[in-house]
Amino acid sequence: MSAPAGLKRTPLNWVHRQLGARLVDFGGWEMPVQYSGILEEHHAVRAAVGLFDVSHMGEIEIRGPEAFRLTDFVTTNAVARLQPGQIQYSALLYPHGGFVDDILVHKVAEDHYFLCVNAANQEKDYKHIAAENRWDAEVEFASERYAQLAIQGPRALATLQRLTPADLSSLRYYHFLDGEAARARARIARTGYTGADGFELYVPPEEAPRLWREVLEAGREFGIRPCGLGARNTLRLEARMALYGHELDASTTPWEAGLAWIVKLDKGDFLGRAALVAQRERGVRRKLIGFEMRGRGIARDGYEAFIDGSPAGWVSSGGPSPTLKKNIGLCYLPAEHAVIGKTIQILIRDQLVEAVTVPTPFYRRPK
Amino acid sequence: MSTYPGSYWYTKEHEWVKVEGEIGIVGITFHAQKELGDIVYVEMVKPGSRVEMGKRLGELQSVKAVSDVYSPVSGEVIEVNPVPSDAPEVLNQDPHGAGWLAKIRMSAPEEIAALMTAADYQAYLGEET
Image (cartoon, rainbow over all chains, first blue to last red):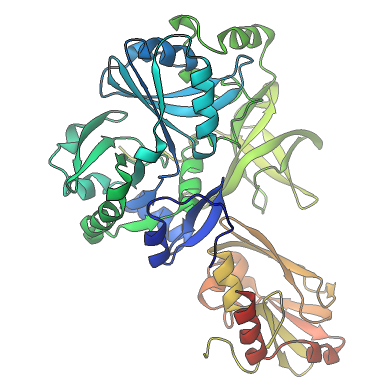
């Protein structure tokens, strides 16, 4: 299987080939979509543990005495609320209020923030932040210095604990520590994009293949599976986690996307704030809502949503939920219709198939 | 390789047909299910439908993809296998057997001559990859 020319590869590309992964072009990256099969990988994460290569994700570091001011100005969430070692889900917005990207902000120290950003957006994000740097913060495009592995599932902790002296059980959700994993320097974060408990590890690229193999070995007794982007997508959809380019883009605001909780209007000025205030006063016209298919059929990304037979919106992400054994999706609807329990129709191959709006997340992990 | 039954006929779109008298039993190939990945949804035309060679006979969906099934032969669909629509994984597990999709009363059995033998099909797969 040969890759189209020009695709970027992660440090684990050869490892994936050895494992017989199916590799695809994902936003300019040659990434594994599946190894054994999407369903098996999905279930491994829900029931045990799975390992993902997410080295395509980007990293941007902001340092210096004015790192806080720049980070707080370009993001929507309140950076001042972060303690060192804590992580925050946040967004970069354009002045008009649309998404540049959705990101994770890690506070390393008072003068150091570490941002994890989407693969396809990383250069854009870096330029966007650098262009707003009217202070004297140091902004570094650091993606080449990091590989990223995600270990996800109820047995993620037991798996990773075998490889690190750090006490992982005391590491709280959305917190991180700088330590070691399999003797490699690692930033270990209790985060993920699956709706499962788990960890994301930022490690030097040259350590990634060995770490990958050691994680698979450590998780063997739990039935660990290498997992591709196919399972990552079904898992994140069940957990109603947004995907840039689907739920979020430059034409979408946090109000519309159901992400008001990452916007802190009271924190002081930030990029996009005025537009968000104005939109809130004007009223939000469309909103994202989850739905389940009632009729037979699978709603796919981009399919049209109808209300009473008239076009009303579109499916931002849709597909089967392997955990719930239902066909689910997220769609944008006019705000007055984006309420739970509403019957809608999805246009599937020239036929309107019934669906109903439901509360999200579709799946919530047991406590 | 014994993956592809020697008594079946194959299309370039990765369907097979097994001829039993005037009836053609139709399914997708091992290669097709492997390319699709885990199949989660199957919808076939209704029994009684008339289908033409190369035209749509149904639809399969995997977790990620939507794919049409084209009929390898023309005729009337006389039976649709109920198993795949309830348990689509049968198409991954036994695509040449229990995962058959439809039985077609062939209106032009001479069409079979245009299809590939198992050996031709395996050579075709070799060229395709």
